[in-house]
Image (cartoon, rainbow, N blue to C red; front, side, top):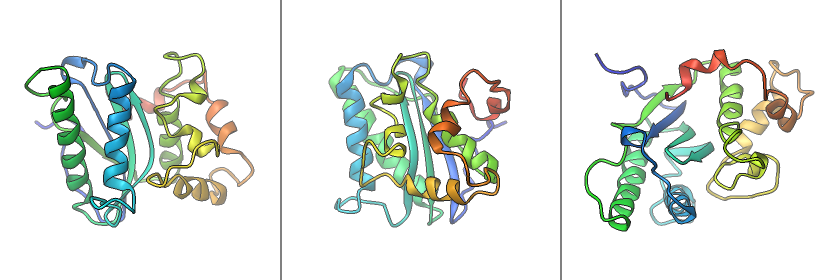
Length: 203
């Protein structure tokens, strides 16, 4: 039986949590160069000015790269957007990684997983979950270089990231009553129970 979230039934105008880890839980990012190369490929396939851009089919709303896994929160307009984007991204990065470390074989633990985001609370909570991933890994997690969190705080501006889709939704959300900052929404959650996140973790 296929693993949960491994079946690929994609919807037009759908929001998805995409994630994967290294084969055998091994590292897929060993140093800053590896992280930066992965970010380069995100830009290559998502920047509207790039000749290889898939921006008309898919948008990246939030992300976090960790030593042995990654999380991407995407919106796809075209139901083939995720397939084309992930094929390009993962193939390009795996080829780079294998060449650099003189290795062969599979880099990732099977195919990426994709979970459809079907409710407003889940939509908002997912971005928080993704941005809290570095907590415990680094002390200054708010300034973690390989997460979109600083974009949400206005400290970074990347043309290939569409953080405003979440921030605008956040401001207008009845779920939050429109009176809570995104920073407070994320950081006040640290230390609270995360049992509700069990269905979106990759362990």
